[in-house]
Image (tube, rainbow, N blue to C red; front, side):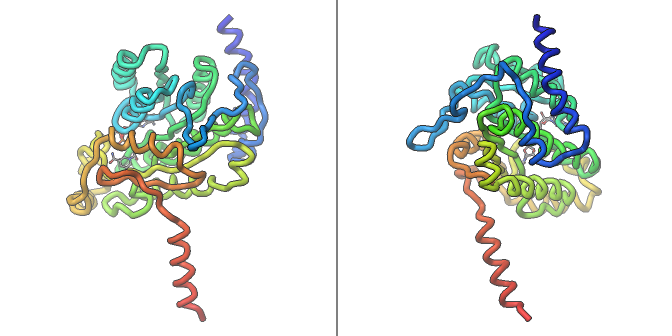
Length: 323
Ligand SMILES: NC(=O)c1ccc[n+]([C@@H]2O[C@H](COP(=O)([O-])OP(=O)(O)OC[C@H]3O[C@@H](n4cnc5c(N)ncnc54)[C@H](O)[C@@H]3O)[C@@H](O)[C@H]2O)c1
């Protein structure tokens, strides 16, 4: 029976999947592509909000990528603490995944956590991960595109893991959650970095990927897209956070000079705990507007970065420079 359902779902998904494979990687094509899970939990409004505009996390199904450690694990834990119904944790490190999911399951209940081993830069694996989440929890409401690496020594992999994954997670998210597809709205939070707003010169390629995440997220902030899909996409950019990612920069940078520059540039920055970053994200889930970019630094409350302010300055400068 389970196998039959799986086959049905696979057939239902095939058109979607072939769209991805046919290289029609436009948000429009994906978001407007109608396909169907008959058993996808339908709601009159997925992300019900009360009068204070607070989203009720109960009954929400969340997907967190890179959730086996660091910031992703802290986010999964915080969301479960805050009452989220269930969390799918996607990670490509099986050992870490097993260990972390056991901790989450012991703390919050086995039925609330689904571990899925997958590489976020691989479309097939991600599509299967999303499909399995729907089979298991009957919905997807919130996606946290968090998985990422900082390794300029392996820059091709870094580009794929940090940027391809964000595109794949977002486009698949649109398919599963968009009103114009088979869902009824949702939230996608793309985890970027302060390096996506102000360059980390010791890691120029990592910086490039983070500017990419910010640009992609901003470009998906159009009110028209939001009206049509009901999916809010926003970005969250932490500054230095105490995780494995920050370990051994000398082994991950282009050469010793770049590593030394990173150490020098960041020596006065306060390193934050992943738990604080996770709490900040949950705080802004309610208020973040489509396309907004938020920064978390020095363990303070997250704040929104105003791109329009920046743009005004650019316009002012352009006027001053006028011919
Ligand atoms: N730590 C920081 O200082 C910092 C600062 C700003 C932004 N960030 C961003 O936060 C996110 C999380 O980083 P972190 O610090 O928690 O790092 P981390 O190394 O502690 O955790 C990253 C997780 O992602 C997983 N992962 C890596 N590649 C993957 C892949 N291809 N497929 C699936 N899973 C994969 C890892 O196994 C790991 O569990 C990243 O996007 C990073 O760019 C981190």
